[in-house]
Length: 280
Image (cartoon, rainbow, N blue to C red; front, side, top):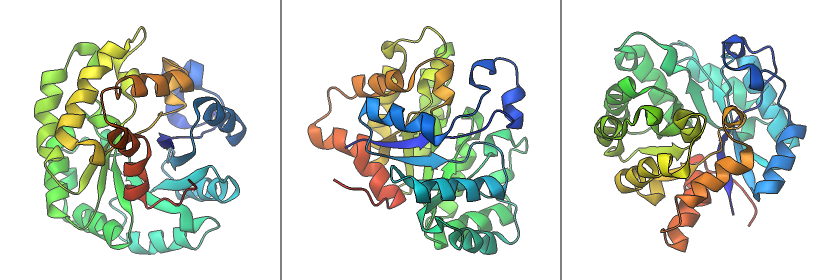
């Protein structure tokens, strides 16, 4: 079994897609585009993650997609960590078509300039409310924010945090030592799991499996297979690799694991973390 724990859908008019260099993925990506990719790669089920539009309407759309698409086993929706009515927002999501498939929330923390953002009282309260609602919180952050993530995880032990893209190590700049030092403290928090996703994009055009293998090996050392899950980061991965190539690269880095450890990374961790209901 393979669970793609991190992919998106979007339309060409998402504002962030207007940035230079994104022309090749500035188009609509739909369910009809997704399913053939899953079939080719042998993926059983997926987790659909908010795609940076940062509004409740996107989450409603994604929940509706999940409700009508058996292969989508869960949705990580969007919520602002500074929303004073976040508990009501989450309850509202639950009442929508597909609301039972909401498994987590994400906010675009990577775009926040304030280094103390995750230490704010209202943000900590929101993180606690997300955990109390039985949901996870995905951390989409950059390298310099990893220390504040660790502080937030320790301060809200009732919430499970999911580190997207291993915290975006600077693979193209050979930043292994820098990233290892930054992520070690976060990996020491028992309520944090991490995703092997987005690594090829960080490696850049012309990537090789050897470029990402040291980061995967370090993540396996620090988090262990039971706290690691894998995701394609499609369609972002299309900037440098096809969906099938993204999966092949991840699997190539797992070759020395036992069958049980591979099963955790490729499916078990995602199923446990997001409480997914998937067939055998």
